[in-house]
Image (cartoon, rainbow, N blue to C red; front, top):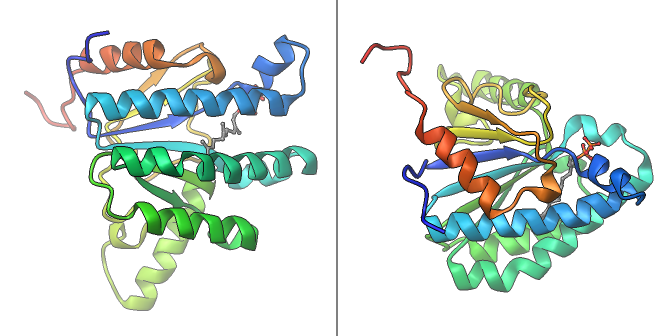
Length: 226
Ligand code: FPP
């Protein structure tokens, strides 16, 4: 497979459709999340191969806490196990692993694992892989505004959880939904959006490449004229 013609600096993905993918197969929703992790792995591998610098995923929203306890626990356990399992690959590929979100809501065990993996990959210089967990855009803006006021500052960016990370060039959302769902509200001001009907567990390297081809055809003007 040839690399895409244009390589964005930061690609962010709203992974959607795991539940429907599982239901179509008469299986439990968590089975779709398991298969979704395989898609994350495939997309991270492709991003590393193509030289993408930042790849982020909306893994769990603040609103997702409202799902049935069994699904929430299953997802937390899956994230914990997946990040542990991927650590050797992260280290081998120079991947810096970062988790952003309302960490205070996560279990002590998950937070300890996240801290450990972030510390062990902090020197990664190839791809920065970001998982947004217990994240919402409105929460981020509010916590940033509070901290900015406390510090007497007058610009918000340094207080957003994404401080130091370039805004996404491209946002991909799978499964046919066409909305932002309280994700990166501030940071997507000039982001290009690509929506695909593919359900997340079916989104692999080929589908990722197609989304990047669509991005390459966009004319980004940032409000100016060319
Ligand atoms: C959306 O599908 C998906 C999620 C809410 C969770 C996605 C999280 C992962 C795949 C875990 C990734 C973690 C690591 C560490 C690699 P949905 O449940 O909303 O599906 P539906 O729209 O069909 O109901």
